[in-house]
Image (cartoon, rainbow, N blue to C red; front, side, top):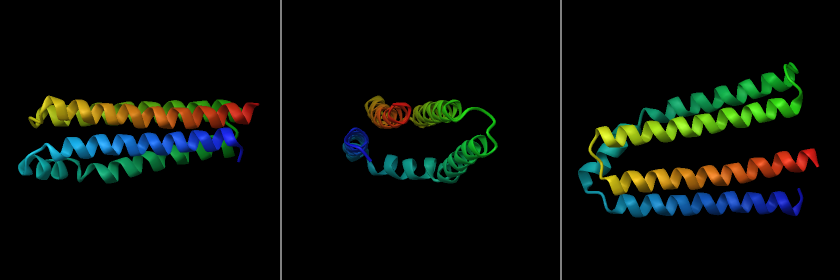
Length: 134
């Protein structure tokens, strides 16, 4: 593993920590009822998210194993599907929070946190792809 990929991993790790910090600060401003509602709203999403990610990874391995497309096309397709998944889950979260009367500042913090995590993922994935093609 070269220094560029290690740097990208560190960037992703730091962006995840920063995003987590934003969420924790936003959560601290919520009253107890909203915190409980938050847990109830997203409890069932965990299994759906795990299943979606497992499906994406399975699809990726099938594309690679069966050589449906050239390897680099499969990688770009997989990354594109991940981006779509991240966008859809962020939007779904926003809509749930809006429907349940969460403060606009809280929703904005959650969205900013998601964008920061997405950027960390994007930097890492593009670094790996560019390193592979170099």
